[in-house]
Amino acid sequence: MTRRALKLFSGSAHPALAKAVADRLGIPVGLSRTVRFSNENLKVCLDESVRDADVFVLQPSCPPVSDGLVELLIMLDALRGASAGRITAVMPYFPYVRSDKKDEPRVSIAARLMADLVTTAGADRAICLDLHSPQVQGFFRVPVDQLSAVPMLIAHVRAQGELGDLVVVAPDAGEVKDAARHARRLGVPLAILDKRRTGDDERARAVHLIGDVAGKRCLIVDDEISTGGTAIEAATHLVAAGAKSVSVAVVHGVLVSDAPARLAAAPLAEVIVTDSLPVPEPKRGPRTTVLSIAPLLAEAIQRVHEGRSLADVGGPDALGRV
Ligand code: R5P
Image (cartoon, rainbow, N blue to C red; front, side, top):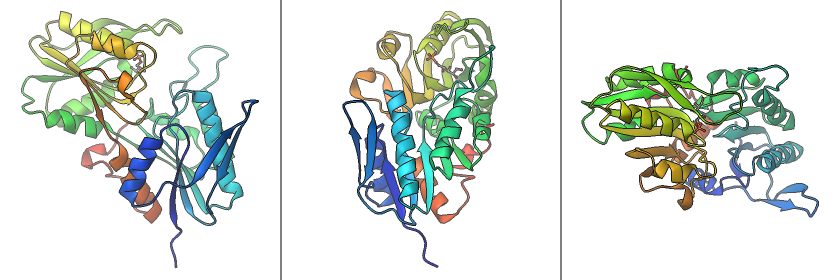
């Protein structure tokens, strides 16, 4: 039996990541064009045959978010119409991922709607990375592989030397489970911050600290930095509690508006992010480290293509994120 050809296409969101993944897979990025008409409608043209191919489409959600989403949907639909054999949407940063619950009356669980849209448009399966909450996988009616880049972030910290005085910090209640696991794997203590937000207010406030950080190096681990408010507030609170230094390691560097400048001015020794989203030079501060997820994605794509298990993709530490 001949295996379907492996193809990787990219939307406009993050072509550099698509190229890095394709290079590792030893294939070119599929030929496609997105045309924007004067009425702002988009057209996606696939410039090569995809008939019966095993096609992966890489498109993280980043500004302009709505355009990127529509481009992805049109691309999936074009692939289906062009008789692709199997279509996998690769969304390292999932659209509307933080809208994953109905936490006030009469609001949409928009992340579920996004899953519906992607599936309706033609995706037979999806690959995601460090979803805001793991249950977002359940919003899909097709198979989803959720990868984690946190082991990569942890490996980076481990490679910096002795962990003797390190404390892993969960910046809010939502991160406690994950942070506890990372602390256990590193063999270091855990501290927990109690963060509060009011309504749609993007300003986070750290109100209580559980754990001893005096004289310690703190490592805040989180899924994303958006406004930077959570990380800055946590760092300020930890320094006031006597921490020797504070670094933050997050998977998704959303880094909206003036977040890079505010992070640069914060008491943070290092800001570690991945390239799940583009992190152009102006978004990188003097103490920003960007780690590439291209090897992780390429490995996952290769295994999905070959029908192999993804259980230990990213190393044995990647197991069991929930
Ligand atoms: C919140 O629940 C998330 O885990 C992050 O802490 C949050 O998204 C970070 O956002 P910001 O940088 O705007 O505080």
